Length: 232
Ligand code: G6P
Ligand code: MG
Image: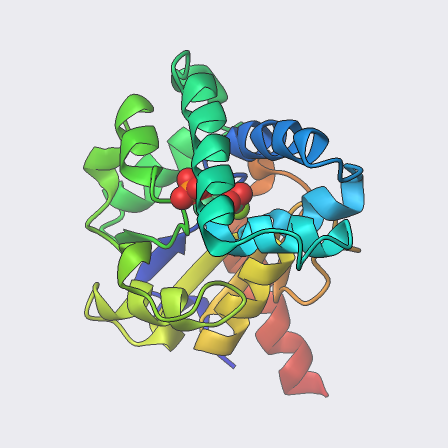
């Protein structure tokens, strides 16, 4: 069991962890699902969280029983259309979409000399981080274009530690998505799930919302984890 004192770095998801942009992704997909005549549900929205652009489109088509209805070229066109919808929503983006406490948390870990990397599946993540004025805190970013597999595969979190020259055990990963928590767990990092603990029950540590994410609370949770294992 990893102790808090061994932690040297944090690997962040972006959408739904640092910023409320997951709602923008959902809105843009919802728009496309309507056009494709696939009924939008909360469950579908949850399945799409953290999942890359093409994989998301394929999930939507499968959900609507339309997985064989479109050619690859048509799918590329629809994925581009979703991205256009998303980029329109990003035009008005500013610091107000930073989720409660996350600006302070990121600054705090940087002040404490932890290393920080970004493990977002989004090709738009550099643009979003710049707009939020948070890019300066990130030592490194995994470019999702270079990955063989998307979340829930661990590759993105494995790389998130590697680019900081850290071992996975020396990192905490933060996620709002089931696919993302699975990816962190597979990489060997300590997983923090932010959101409904019933949905994110596979996470090592659960917080209901971002305002609870502090170094002190992460330390407390990791101390409790090692205590409970020691007394087992
Ligand atoms: C993130 C979001 C997903 C999004 C994916 C790809 O993981 O949580 O909702 O589909 O990135 O984003 P992109 O901006 O590249 O389409
Ligand atoms: Mg996310």
